[in-house]
Image 1: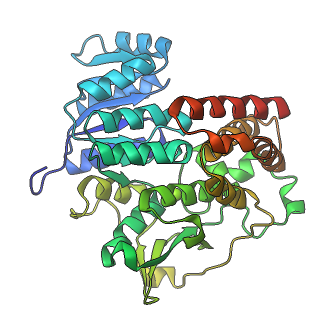
Image 2: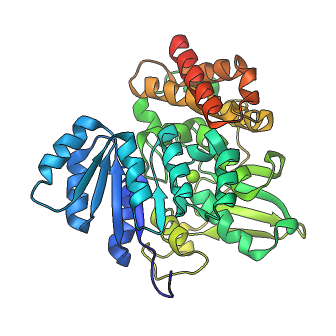
Image 3: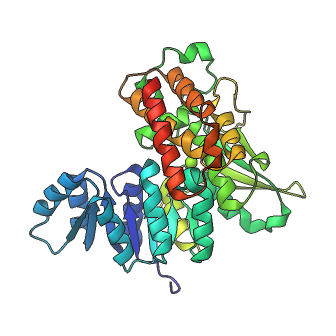
Length: 385
Ligand code: MG
């Protein structure tokens, strides 16, 4: 990457919320997008590929790939299909950076393939680190791959870490918006619906992560993500509820100095910084107006009412594929909740039961062992539901 120039990029999961915002950053900054991928939404991919003159696209759903091929028949755009087509696009691309904004566990193999193919990785798919954090970080070290976080909290910590050295870190402080159910009791959670859960106070995100934000599972995953990215144990990662989502996270150093990163809540800054760090480039988001915000508030998270935060800490401490089991059970439960098959509290019950029933997950180390645990946790969660 030369001065004043962005790298050429791939955007994996281009039709999701972060993927769309990544393409918006690319359009605004004149970044060359060398390939995009999505699962099923071929109409949106066709529009994106035409608008940004993208040479290669990958659809993991085979029948969607056929539709897309027909829709782009009048263009030179190459269409790859299936999971293997996606991995092939990653391997063959001349992009220097891949933004991985695929949703869920499906992002793991693409993450590993990006690393193996010698590209740098702007990581929005937190499941890559939740499911297989040790493997991912180890292979990044071996391949000298730079992983820059796109998650807003981790982007904030990444920036705040420039103020001191690793040995000077006392703790990381993740901020949480608290979600739409902040301040509610277990009793009050009983009758809440999907629509209540999808009304996020400050961030605009996809449905799955919005529910995870309402249950604080998302914050639990972010503890695991931070532990792997920054090599800091869960006992030194605190969570503080900050309703305004202006401070995106903080680092406390041994001299008790706390460095925070602030901005309006807009993921496009995280994508932009991930691609240029440690350099900065002209803004794509609006400036922060602190006077109009007036005040910033902070609360302790309610770990009693929202038990998945503690479950994430325990899974991280247990190690191996325990976080993978947690993630898999949660994916199944949240899907069932979004389809109105279970209640919000049943998400908690399902996930806690699956994780408690799988202490052997802690012994899984290799990718195939981890994927076995993932499958078993999904089966158990489905059986409970
Ligand atoms: Mg986040």
